[in-house]
Amino acid sequence: MTKHLARHLAHRWEIISWVCVIFFAGLGIAWMFWLPTVGKGGLFLAMGATLLPLFWEHISVFAKMSWIAMLFLLLGVEYRAIDKEHRENALAQQEALKTIGDGFTKVLTDQKNSFSTLVTQSNEAFKQTTEQASDQFDATMKRAQDNLNHMTGGDTYPLVVPILVPLGNAPNTFRLVIQAVGDSPLFDVDASLMKLPFPATRSYTDYLSGKDSDDTHLFSGASLSPNRVEMLGPTVTISDTGQTDYSIATLARNGTFNERLHIKKTGNDLKREGTALVLPYSFSCEVTRERIGKDKKAHQTQVTAIPWQIFSVANGQATPQK
Image 1 (cartoon, rainbow, N blue to C red):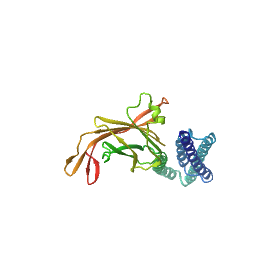
Image 2: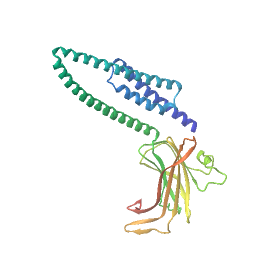
Image 3: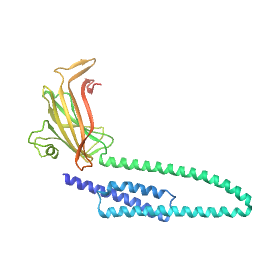
Image 4: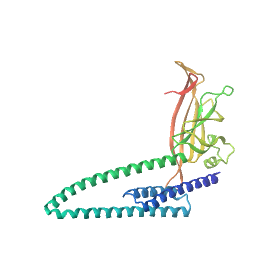
């Protein structure tokens, strides 16, 4: 499954890379015939150079050479635009010098006024051009990042929590739900659960790779929409005393996540508070994400931590107490 996912992702990277190359190259070829103003070629050159590292490790040698050729094309456009502007400025200066024949004094006065006006206009034009280019670049990069997050999942993470209302025919037994927390959907999701502690003969690596039959498979899906809860089939049964701990491993397109879920019984009976009933159960959890550090090794970094939650039931709904 991992090899298939890797090939699938590599193919996706290759397609996206070629779309970017064709777009930038087409723009550069068009500008070779209709030169843009100074700065536009440099802007798209910077965009291409910024995007290139995202694709470099995932595309073929031919695709890499195409990226390099495209960047040189945009560089040539920018140099031609600069040369064109220099020629136009030189012609404008020559026209200004023709007015010298109207009188040396008048020429000096006109040149002084023209120079002051030119400096002011140039400063204003340069400032406006810089601000527009910066705004366009920021907006383009934001759209590119949003599109990339939508395709990969971005910073969205999976979260599995219990519904702390025990099943009627199974005391201390609860249903679980899974949700994607974030602005982007999760893709290629696969979640498994195991009760802690791990068996002495079993490693955490074996757990993540699914080499142990003690795992309880929770969920498999091509996608998981954000802010939408999916009910899971398997249930969990906790102890009457102390807390019961679980480890939940979830694989998604944007990474490997590990959740530690803790559930405990806080009493034997429901307690009434006003019009609500307080449930005698509580849970907490911590979610970490596997990231590759500078040492080329996998490290667990914390994504979120939910403190102990106590729920009350009112109007047919269970909500956490504040």
